[in-house]
Image 1 (tube, rainbow, N blue to C red):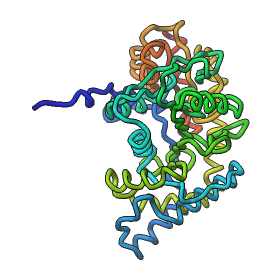
Image 2: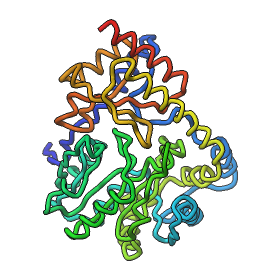
Image 3: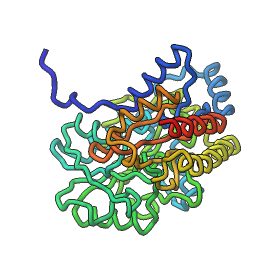
Length: 379
């Protein structure tokens, strides 16, 4: 059977690591998971209880294509609370996770062959989705002195769009208002669309992340309930678009996805009122971050950029290996700790980097660091 070149995207290596870790667990080994960017906590208890009630009272059929009006209004309210932005709820579009938000954004903004810039290291699915849609992913190599974030001088002249993430995956670094404004202005000067991935907003440590909506309305912002709201498997997110793009996104959403999962939208709406539980999760991440920033250098992983947000530490291991995938496999086999090779995030320099996630329990992080220290001492 003839197949499309668009299906030939690169594998998502972290999923292979997860599969290897699962096989080790099935064989009876206890694995400490530092590979996956997933909170170790469930959706907030009150949100799950709200769904249980809804299931008794409502068939939970289709919602309108743009999502439950109450959820869209509550998200708009949050932009006022978090950023001081007066946001029209009509601009909020509920999506099936952030992934469908990227699909909708790319469909709305770009014709086949368009060139869309993404920073390296960066989330690998950006490139895969762009390629699967017949778009050209333009890899922009970021510099350590810029904390692995793009700057205007890095941008080619002939971009049709730019996608940035702050806090970023895998580095956890953030763009301040000046840096984000400079990128937005550089895109405007090129006539390029600007897309801001804000999925890790809320998971910040020393300062609040800046939303692109604090700077301009002429952008697409994509977010999700997966990280701060601890709802990865519920597959619900949102995007904010300019007012004159609402109808085009609505037409695309209706035809591509019909609507986001109704049950997940119910949970998401209730989760937005669970601040105490969500901030308790953040207290765990803060403890884990402090442990990682102290423990990883003690183990020998000392070339790291302290993360401003998210729950990752990205380490340069060029002094240890030029094959991060082999090193990750060795750590899994001998230490029972699953970590992600940097090849997922940067096809070139990723051979000498590893990503460590600290989204799990503090007990797991403490044990994982102890295992890493023993492994490195005996290597």
